[in-house]
Image (tube, rainbow, N blue to C red; front, top):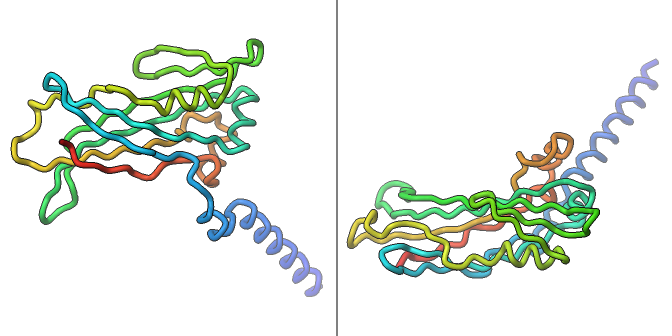
Length: 195
């Protein structure tokens, strides 16, 4: 009797170990990969008292996300921009922020990729996925902040990052998004001084 209990426990432990290896790949393999989303560069310029953002972001979808997209899953992306002010004794203070959202879906009947700006509602169609991702990563003259709202002689910094919104995935895929890095791609913060 005792031998059967031990074998059952061993089998259960082996299944748990296998599940962990499948869900959480070895860190060395993950560290060598190029991040799927990268902010290549970003900058601000001041025009007529308004700070405008220009940036280029490289979006690459992993095979699992491409497959989900081609099977009707809508992917929602969020680009977040924060303007911060440094403080001597505490962490930096966020003085302003902006979120730009995009939804990407594949229309199987027309074989088009439809990219919608969630901030403006403007929708564009593309024949190639790479073209849609390149357009989403091209930010030109996005209004950030009225310069009159900032204090003079203060150093401000801007930081930008982008990510796939796991909460916008269909419920069956959301758990994967919370557990697996392939289902929650995000870029590192890209930071520069506000001039």
